[in-house]
Length: 287
Image (cartoon, rainbow, N blue to C red; front, top):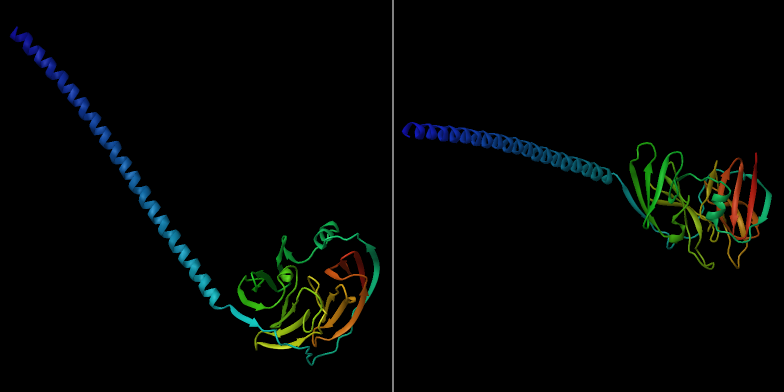
């Protein structure tokens, strides 16, 4: 019995030892897994922390670059409230030889519909009418300010504010050349003195160079060709014209009478396409 008991004890002890050993191994393995998971979690946390730091630093750098860039932006308010018709001294310009080759009743259509239906193209950024460009600059109306950027570098150089009806923030209605802004100020409504005109403004010296005659502009956009600005004006009680303006002086040098007010102009394929309230025109540029 003693020997059996011993054996039993031994067996029990052995089983206990085995069980204990197995238990210890399981604990050891579990601890190892926990430690590995802890290390992985720690590495993930460190990685996330580093990534967050990098992102924060990147945002700080980008923000700093934007701030530095914004410091270079010239903010100018162009006060046109008391400006009268004024012309500058400058070179004379020969008017373009324009000839109406097509005049069609459109049954009253929207300018935007006419633009797309005729597959016309203006230098705009996609379909953002308030974002347009020329060979040198990009222009964007943001709220009541005209923002101007260098086209090649993307550098923001001007933030300009001047009075015009918000309806005329869209389409190509500004042009910068040699530090001079060519723009328009429109009061939407019946004709009144000192409204609806074009102007040239020297941004370097913050000085008005010229202001065209009243009621010489209320098209959505204008075209610059050589030293001539092509634009238009018309309304219910006034005659409707397509004008040519000398860029150097602001003087009207030629005009074509239309049946209705011109609103959108597109130069394409050697022609000027003109949409009016109820007529569409094709005007040939005869060289």
